[in-house]
Amino acid sequence: MIKSLLHNIQNLITLSSAEIDIVTSLFKEKTYKKGDLFLAEGQICNKVGFVTKGLMRYYISYNGEEKTYAFSQENDYVCNYESFLPQSPSSKIIQAVEDCDVLVISYNDLQLLYINVREGERFGRIAIEAVFLQLLKDINSFYTETPELRYKRFIKNHADLQQRISQYHIASFVGVKPQSLSRIRKRILTQS
Image (tube, rainbow, N blue to C red):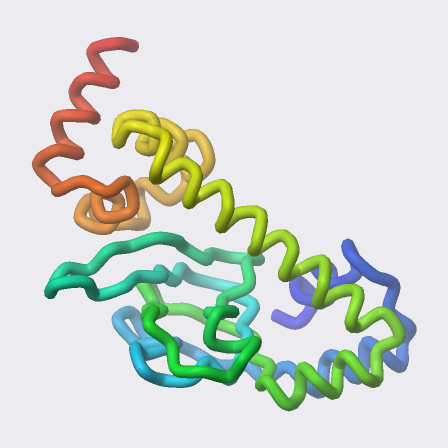
């Protein structure tokens, strides 16, 4: 499990053997069963995870409806940075869609990583920049693209997830009801 995390980090920064030991000691293995929450609404996000196996979804509960807005799968980080960075209660929920193996680092241990790994803060900055850019793309897409275009982009960017995620969650991510997603899928198939 740790090898994939170390590979991910070393794609961004260089780690000495002593720093590899530090990273290895700070991340802890945790298993989440399908349906388990990584983060509940109202809870302060006090950890960052690195998914080594499985799939998580991010959603909000709005007027009794679940609105899915992101997914984290193998080799992705999982965290609600909006709650994590200021250590404030989360309005978002993160849930395991499949059984997941995750390497988790607490907020306090991440601060130790920043202090004790020479380029640790650089790693944190690069990682959060990627999250920020993806968030901007997702927001732009939601306001400027039709549900059909968002579905096409989902298929293009997450083709491997179609078989792993329920149609309900895909419809929620695209911003439509499941019945509307069925119509969109039929239109796209007839266009091909």
